Length: 73
Image 1 (cartoon, one colour):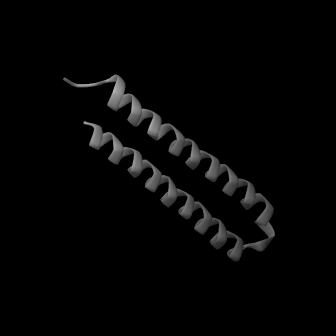
Image 2 (cartoon, helix red, strand yellow):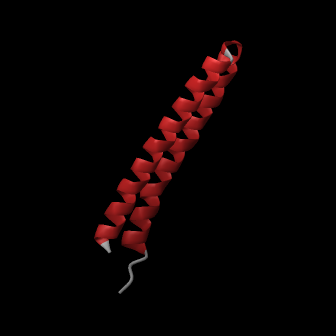
Image 3 (cartoon, one colour):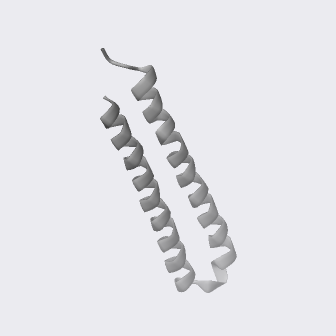
């Protein structure tokens, strides 16, 4: 059971890294297509980073809960 929770913690960090990469990539593409919206798109990019990091923060907490609180005999 412990190995599975460790794997799930690393998976959530990898998933958040992929999410942040997607947000940054989309932001760069959007600004390249329409530079006049750069300020508005920057705000959306920051919101995307914050939401992705929130998911990355909650995922290890859930992995710890599953591994230590909800132990299966």
